[in-house]
Amino acid sequence: DEAVELAEIELRRRNVRLTCQVASRLPMLMVDPILIEQVLINLLKNAAESVDSAQRPTAQRKVELSVALAVQDNRQLVEFSVLDYGSGLAPEMLERLYEAFYSTKSYGMGIGLSLCRSIVESHQGRMRAENIYNGAEVTGWRFSFWLPVGEPASVAPQAMHSTI
Image (cartoon, rainbow, N blue to C red):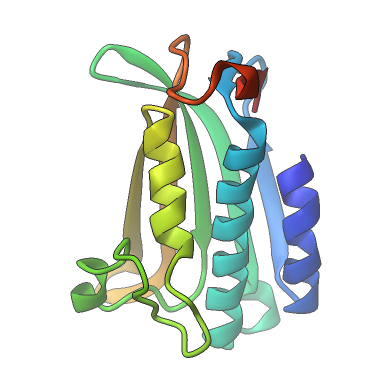
């Protein structure tokens, strides 16, 4: 909730609508809530920038956040997914997406996604980015990350909290 509240400032500024779908009765996660909040804020702000730079019409100026339970390799996970309706990324940029100091933005420092991936992986999670297609046309972008259920993260014990 706090990450959404903070990111909504940027979303409103760019006239981008946010919809959230959070599954009920999600299990507790052992994570540093401030770090996971930072990942969500960065992904939501990037999504708003993507929609804005694509100059989508009002009806398509939206970002979707979903949080749901998932199973992968017989492990329970909580999946966080941020979907935007921007212009996606060129395939050659995908290879460098998480590279420190590489940015697709003229004003970007290139540390946001690299830091996000490091945070997620420090919690034994994984992150994925993909273009969304309608036929051959790229119609958006999705960033997803998964955090394991019931496994303590590799952060300092005093920093661990049960939260989403």
